Each structure stands twice: as C-alpha cells, then as structure tokens.
Image (cartoon, rainbow, N blue to C red; front, side, top):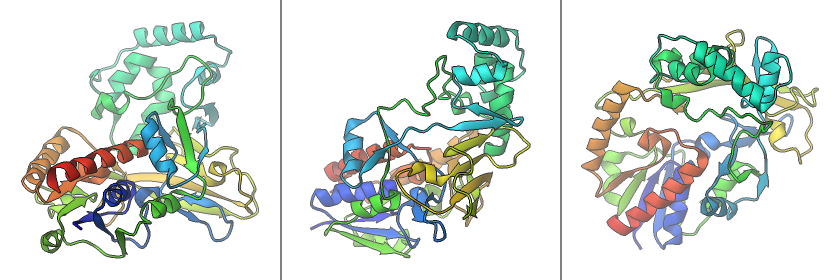
Length: 375
C-alpha cells in the first residue's frame, strides 16, 4: 500500500487525508500543534462550558450538494442562519446591508424603490480621486459616500491595515447590498455548524485505519520527502521553501476572549462588526449563539484585533497586491519543479482566501488529481 504524507491537519489536510484513505492509500498526517482543525479549531471554555470558535466565527455554508454531503458524513450539521449586526457611530445596524439597514441609516422607512433612488443619487453626485479599480473607488461608485463611510472606510483600515484606495476592487466585489429585508449573511442553500464543533468533525474525518495522525510533530520537507509516494503540503508555501523569495504578507488576529460567568446573554446575537474607528477591534463574537441548543452557565465574548503578520504568529488573511502576486508567482514556479513528489494545497499552500466549502471541494478535487496523475 502506497503511503502519502500530509502536512497540516486543518480542513484541507483532513479532507485530502480522508479522500486518500477512502481510495486505499496509507496516510501520515503531520500537525505541529497539539490538536487538529487549524483555524477552524473549536474548544470548550472550562469555566462556562461554551463551545468557542477559537480563531473566530466559522459558519459552514455552500451551494455544492456534494460538499455538504461530504461534511455530513463526519458531523451532524445543525442548521444555522448567520445574522450579523454592525455598529457605527454608536448606532446598531442590521447587516449585511439590506433594506432595514438603509432605513436605519436614512432614519425613515424605505421601500426598495426609494432606497434605490437614494443610492443612485448619492453615487452619481459623488466624486472620488480614487481609481475605480480600487476598493474605495469601486464602492463609492456603487453605493455612494454615506454607506461607504459608515460601514467600510474605518473597518477596512482596521482589518487590512491599508487605506481602501490602496486595495483592489476585488476585495469588495462580493459585498452584498440588498433592497429587501433579507439579513442572511449568505445566499447558499446549505448552512450550518457541526453539533459538536469543527475539531470533532475533523477528528472524525481522520478516524480511519489507513490514517496515522502525528500531533506535535513538524515536517522537515528536505529530509522526509523520500519516505512517501507523494506529499501534500497545506502549510505556507513560502515557509516550505525557506522564504527564498521573502515572506508572503498576511494579516493576523489577536483575539481577546472575555469570560463572563454571571452574564447569560451579552449582545443578543453571535457577531457584531465594529465599523468605526472608535472601537479598535473589528468584530466581537458571543459564541453561545452558535449552539442555542446547549445549556451553559455564563457566556464568552471575543474581540478581534487585526494586525500585520510576523513570523511565529498565526496566518489568517493573505494580502494579495501587485507585488505579492509577483512573489507568489515565483514560489508557484518553484513548486512546479517539485510537482512529481510535492503538491501544495489549501489556503496557505495556495496563498488564497478560501471559504470552508471551497477548501473541502478543492482538497477533494486536488487529491483525486494526485491519485490519477502521481500515484
């Protein structure tokens, strides 16, 4: 039986491992942390019993029926509709932006038609020196300065550490503006969270006689490649090559968890985005709202502070500007020279932001390709 090495026991690595094991291959999964799950890691707070999304909130949502079926093999996915709120200038808004949000912003009830006219008037009257290829120029041209200033200007500065005029329009291309009262954060037909958390789901994915999990164990690519028929690397591609062309930039999060044992409900919802400069954090999460079927004592609120990534920190969001694309291209060309023995996969391996369903689907398809072409 051929054995494949996998670096990383996050969602991509676990999906690849299970796909290989189901196809009769042996798998050894190397994970340098003491748990699986990567940035999807969930854990119980010892004092309150609340299930924490340790690295920030994760809702599994997809339009891909096969992907939904795959994760349901390993966890009971409890339906969950994410209804985020937003704070700006001490006003609480419905979010993502919908007709209720716009009625709150303009301080009067709006119909879809009046809302559309207001937005059209504002964006036609707006002037911006920012290029329409930038996030700032794109948003102002689409929604006008009032909505942009209220929800996106300060938030972007905090989240990305860069002015919106210096970010590409693609950063904002998927931001929904709805002229109805739909406050569902996502449009996908399948949405939910695993009843016992993402870590338990990924542990179940790795529970197979063909899979050997090696926690607290880093993988030395230079010395261990020869021990496997192939290696799938879901860690950072620049780190894998010793930062030969320099480190690729990421934003990281410093997350402050506040345990409130005497409080049963702190904010009445799971997530509030903090869109203005007054609050230094980008969003605050009250985790118990993801598992309303559980009875817990007290609550836990987490606040996220976005900063520039440095070595030794956890990578969260890849920063893909023009120079970064050139650096990534150099690493991808180097990876291509090793493709007979080494495949990069996942958010870090490909240096791209992936939703969880995208990570699962790409890991399945990528692993099938490895089986077909390399094994």
